[in-house]
Length: 267
Image (cartoon, helix red, strand yellow):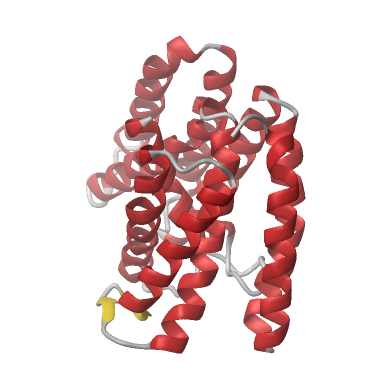
C-alpha cells in the first residue's frame, strides 16, 4: 500500500460490486445503505486525498455529528451536548496541527466535559451525566486515527464497510447462533462472513498488516456490540433517523471506532 490515490480504483470496484449484489438482493434497506455509501465514499476519499488537513476536517466533522447523536440518544442536557461536541472535534484537529499536544488536549476535553454537571450543581443526576460525557470523549477519541494512520485509514474504512455489509448478508443467509443478547439480530455466521470479506478487502488493498487484521477481525464486531449496548441502555433502535436506511451516522461508524482504536494501539 502506498498512497490514497493508489487505493481509489480498488475501492471504486468494491463499491460497484456491492451495488450489483445489493441490486440482486432486492432488499430496500440494503439499497438505501448502498446509496448512502455511494455518497460517503467519494467524500472520504477526497478528504484523505487532500492530506492531513482534509483528514482532520473530516474526522472533526464526523465526530461532531456522532457526538450530537450520542448526546441525543443518551438524553444528555443541552450544555453537556454542546461541550461534548466541541471536545470531540478538538483531538483530530490537534493530531493535524500539534500531535505532540494530543495527551494535553485529550485531558482538557475530558476535564471540561466532566466539570459541566459539577458546575451546574446537579446532585441527583450529576454522576450519570459525568460518566456519559466522559465516555463520549473516550469513545470518539480514536477518530484521530483518520489523521495519524494516513492511507491505512482509508484501507481500514473500506475493509470495515465491506465487513459490515457481508456480516449482514451472511447472518441472514446462514443463520445460526445469536452473537450476543445485546444484538439478537446478529449471528456468529455473520461475524465470520464479515471478517473473511473484510480481510479479503485488506489483502486486495495491500494493507494486510497485523494491526489492521486485528482491527477488522476483532475491533469491528466489538465496536458494533458496544453501540448496541449503548442503544439498549437508552431503549432506542437507532442513534438517529436522518440517514436513509441507516438510522444515524453513529450506526454506520460504530464498528470503525473500535477498529481505529486497535489500529492505533498495534501499529
